[in-house]
Length: 275
Image 1 (cartoon, one colour):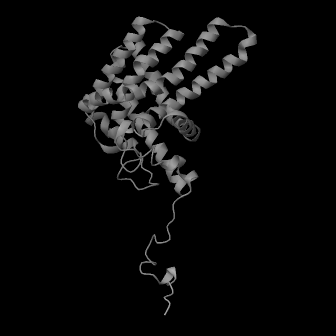
Image 2: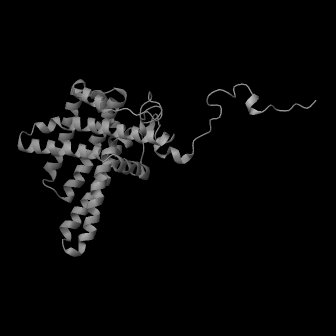
Image 3: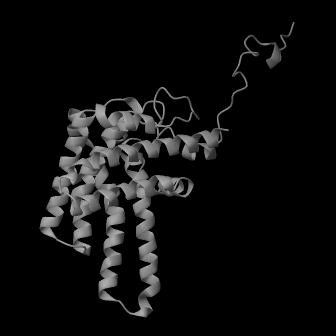
């Protein structure tokens, strides 16, 4: 007697939830979490287990990280003070070596400040995502993520330096269009870098994928990088017009709110892709 295989509906467990599950189309995973890029645990990505939005977050969940950032302003005060000292020390070296705004000063800022900023962002990411911070974590991230931060910072730094160099070298009306293009590119990359540091040091993205997703987030949530840059300009204004010591207080909170804005925006985009 020949045995006829029973249909799928008659097999045990066919009525269980998820029995008809099939893998998602690869196009859906570009922003929603790629196994080799967004979910690395270990290696250079240091990743957040189960995806960049946090190991305890279900896929597509949206969490506002700003309340965590506000709470950390007092709870992580030693961390924020240490971050301010590190960033301001790097900035002081830039001013000492090349005062004023010039192509050289922009390149020096990218080379000296970006590695420190990458470590600070990696630490504030850990605070807003996993509630794990501290000065020891910052120093560890300085060794671990300095090169990754440098890789992010040199991109807008080189473009801005080239734009300034062209502006100083060729100021005639014939070169107005190239100068406008380089200026727009510098502004876009500067805005995108507000997202790119977190995406690089925490989720391990790099290259074209990193900047594509960062620019996508700028287009979808422009208030986040604009708010971060506004905080930077206010801090610079107060530090140069009221008291220079105020500059020490600025980098930590700026990084904290940059991390909170990045992962809130990213979680919103991931939720939209999974609906």
